[in-house]
Amino acid sequence: MEYNHLSKNLRNHYILQRHGFSLANNAGIICSDPAIAIPSEGGPFNTGYGLHEKGKMQVKEVRMILGL
Image (tube, rainbow, N blue to C red; front, side, top):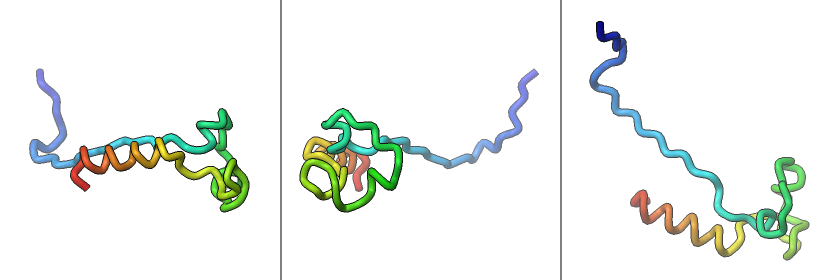
C-alpha cells in the first residue's frame, strides 16, 4: 500500500549555505556570541570579524553557481 499525502505539485526549493570563511575562522576563534562577532570593532583589522578575503570569494562563487 502506497501512502503519500503530499501534493504532486510541490514546487519548494531549499538552499542551505553556511557563511563564507571569516576573519574569526582564520584566527581559530569560535564567535557564536553576536556581541563579539557583529560589532564593527575588534578582530585583526579592528573592523569586527566579518568575511575574510577567502570568504568573499566563496560568496561570489556561490552567487555565480546560483545565478544571482
